[in-house]
Amino acid sequence: LTTTLKLLLLNMTDKKRIDIEEVKNEDLLETQSHQIKWETMFERLFEFKKATGHCLVPNRYKDDHKLGSWVSTQRRQYKAFAAGKANTTTLSMDRIRKLESIGFSWSTDDPRRVDWYVRFKQLCNFEKEW
Image (cartoon, rainbow, N blue to C red; front, side, top):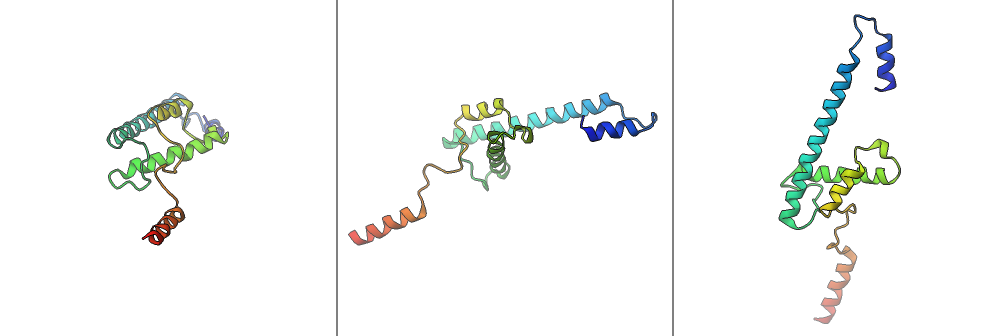
């Protein structure tokens, strides 16, 4: 329980005091619900990977907006985790391993992407040749 909640419970009269076990059960249910949601999104990512051959879901993926947002959130949480802020994220080593097991990339750079300026120079060179 958080310190704030503990203080609140201590300051309540016996009649109004919340059963701490109920609070713990609610926390457990919330944790289980969050885990189910994470697993569901992971399955959607896995289906995306099977269909496309990669896990580079666009942030604004038109076919599944939630999946694009979720993938972006995983990358953001990984950065926090890697920066030593594991207590600020729900991303665990188990989840990191699970994502990596299907080829998830923590980098947002698509390896197929070429910088605009490089392509522009290629176009200029092409024009000179022809």
